[in-house]
Image (cartoon, rainbow, N blue to C red; front, side, top):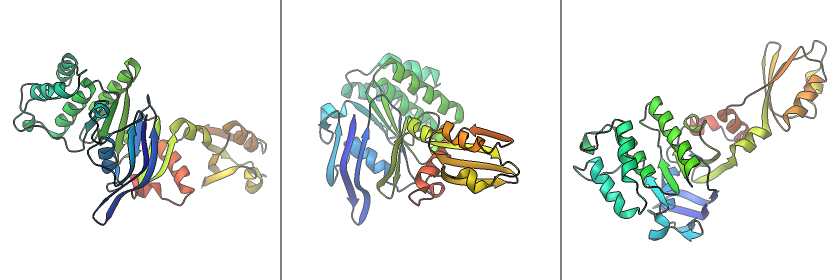
Length: 300
């Protein structure tokens, strides 16, 4: 488990991270969402032990991370801007990381490079942004660490490559103890991969919840109101988050048990009523709307 305990970090007069406490459990895909400047990269760098918090502690499996070699061997950090040695090749980077990660799998690294059509003898400086990102991910997987810290992992990858990387993450989680932490400014990129999502805004955690719990707590019901039914009476007793009307069709977003909400609506004998799946965007809008934030302005 990774724990941030009352973490704060400032750069001169700018407070990048403000008193954050957050727990990331093993064996899940954790998505860290926030706009540019929300503090994602600073938070990941403290998690990686690159930056020292001004206040608080960053702990991995019960051990402080900063200046702790043993703790740092448990994760591989992929920054938003990849850094490679001047004139180095993928083979050179494999040799470098083998020194620091005892379980680094050279064979696996070269096998993935072949599948991704990356020339292991070509200078990395000649690679495109997407190719460099692919190489970083390959090196991170081959390091065989328990945690993989990814800053804007899917930025620069085409849709096919994105799905390929997501498949690799899923396979790793099935085969071994593996927890990816993915920071992104785009919620839609993480919708089909994350188990738990944290929302960073202005250096603080606005929301941190398990996606399944959120999906079970918020529901979207679409129905046509019966001719003689009173809308207020139909919705009475339902914890309504939002109501959208298009002619006679009503789309309701509400909190509570889905079957209970449906039964209450069906008591009015509507001509049509059904539960619809909620997107991750809609779930976040419903959750953050309660505390007065416009989620679309924050992460889209």
